[in-house]
Image 1: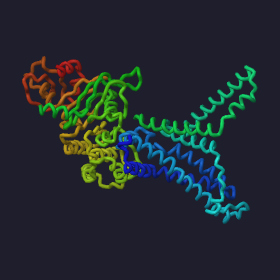
Image 2: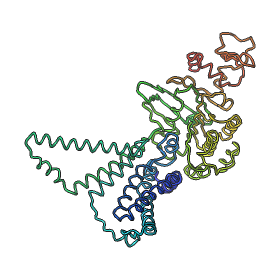
Image 3: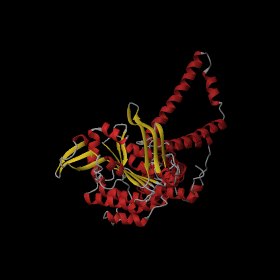
Length: 243
Length: 290
C-alpha cells in the first residue's frame, strides 16, 4: 500500500472526482443555497447559531451522498475498481472529498445564502432583527467546544461516509435506519439493565450513577475509537468492492 | 530450452481449479483450469448465462474466486495492484453514462494509463467516424458510446484487454472497423480476450477459442490446433460419414465439420464450430483432450 502510494495519482483522482461529479456538486451548491436563503428571507434574517446548524446538516448530507458516488451502479463501478490507483489512494481521495471539499462547499453555500438572504430581507421588508452577517459578525461567534458533542457529531458523519460505500441505493435513508436500529438496541440494553437491576433490588439511581459516572475523557476516547473503527471499516469495504 | 522459456513467459493468464458461484446452490464455474498465452486474440464463447462475463470479471479482479487461483501476468487480480491495473482494461458489456464530454472523459482517465496514446485514440475514433469529442457521453446512443469506449480501451495499450460483448450495439461497418482495429493494435506481448455469443462477428480475427458450457470448459484451442483436428467445408459427397461431426444446410450447400483425418486445409468457421460443439459436447471433449 505505502510503497505504491503516489501523490500525483491522488491529485489526479481528486481532480477526476470533481469533474465526474460536477453536475451533482452544482446541484448541491444550488440546493444548499436556496434552502437557507428562503429560510433567511422567511424569518427576516437568521442568526449565527442557525448558520452553524445548517452548515453541519449540509456536511452530513454531503458525506452521505457524494463519496463513492461512482460505485453506486454496476456500469461505472467496473471503471472505478479497475482504475489504476491503489485502493488507499481511492479511499483518501473520497475521504478528502467528503471531509475537506464537502465542508468548504457547504460553508460557501450557507454563507452566501444567509448573507444574501439578510441583504434581500433588508431591501424588501426592512426587518427588525437584521443580522449583518459580515466578517466581523462571523468572528464574534463564541464557540463552546463541547468535545463529546463534537466527537459524536463526527461519528455520525463518518457513519454516513461508511454508508456511502456500503449501501448502493438510498444510502442516507438506509444509513439512518441502521443507526436508528443501533440506538434502539442500545436503549433496549439500557432498559434491560434497569429492569434486571430493579428485580435484584438495585436502586435505579445507582445504575444511573454507574452509567453517568463514565468520565468525559473515557467517553471521548470511546467515540474516538469508534470513529477510527468506522473509517477503517469503510476502507476494508472499498478494498473488497465487487461488481 | 529457449523455446520452453518463451512459452512459460508467454503464459499471461493461469487459472487453476477455479470455482465460483453467486448463490451456493447455483454454481457458475466449477473446477476450471485454463492457460492463455500472449500474442493472441482469444474468443470466449458460450451460450447466454454460462459465466463468460463472470470469468472476465474474475480475471480482472472484480470478483473473488470461491476456490482456486487466478494468476494474471504474475499478479493476483484480487490484490488490485496498480501495476496490474495499469496493464489491464476491461470493456464491460454495459457502459457508464457519464455526464461529461468525450474529451473530458479521456483527459481525466487517460492519465492513469502510462501507455495511453491520445493520437491513437483520435485515430480509432476517426475509424468509427466520430469526430466531435465535445459531445457528452450521456447524450450519445449506446452504439456510439460503445465506439468511444472501444477506442479508449484500445488506446490504453494495455497488455491484457478484456472485452465483453464488444460488438453488441455496433452497426455492420463498425463491426468491421472493430475487427480491423483489433488486428492493428495486436502485438506479441498482448492478449485480447473477447467474450461473445455472436460468434460470426469475430470471424477471421480469433487466434484461439475457449468455449464455456454450464460450469465447465469444453474447448480451449488455437486456430491451428482446431483446423489441424477438424475440417470445415461444404460437403462434396466424398466424405466418410463416420468423420462428420456436424452438418447444417446453408445457401452455399451442406456445411460440415469433420474430423480432419485427411489433413485437409480449411479455415476456421467460428459459428459452425460453436454449433458443432454444442451438438455433441462429449465428442469434442474427447477429441481435444486426447
